Image (cartoon, rainbow, N blue to C red; front, side):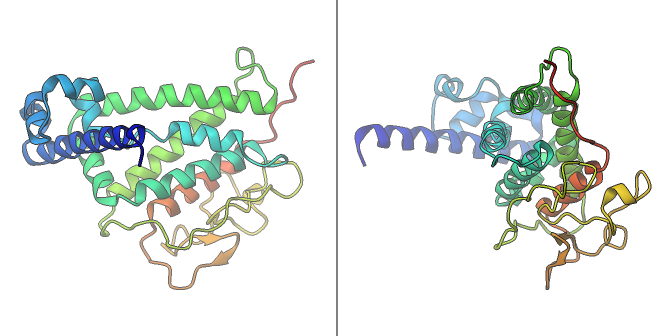
Length: 270
């Protein structure tokens, strides 16, 4: 490994050490009982070094858990031509959910901290709002819409953010032990039948009523969701799937419920 690579690896290790120390200390003592100096000491660095990596104690607690917005936007931009924007966003969020679920213990601890500390929850919401605005810009560009006079891109981004938050809360408050992402993840969602997003995407684990969400009454629960059955991938059940859905499964459930409500996007103005 060359010198540049070694420096980058060292920086990544230092950042991870600070995030680990911050989360561990806050879980042990509570947010208000932990200082930047104590986090720095636990990671064997100086407070000055701490601020080279994080702007605040709260940011250190989050660590890399909120760093996925750029990956989401890149995935939406890189989605194949012909893929509806909702399918593209859905696939991007599910991929991010699988990354987060890969560190289930940290994610659950973070959600517990947020539930106990309104200030850090507000920071999470603030960051999420900024991410949604950035995603809306990407959606607008993909659709050829002007976000200044068309609310559809922001509606898509805000709905996706809401789906993520609901899935996170459902997963974090479940009584089941943390469940990592499935080892054999379903493929990214294909373009929906026809051109209307009113038909639920054949997306990953998209559990939908017969005929798709458009055939169900508003607010109807996707097939299997009410009974606690594991979600299905493209209408095909996963043998041996756990009765308690994983975080990616809950993402799929939230996106499937919203799919019927986001109809065909408006045409761009000439």
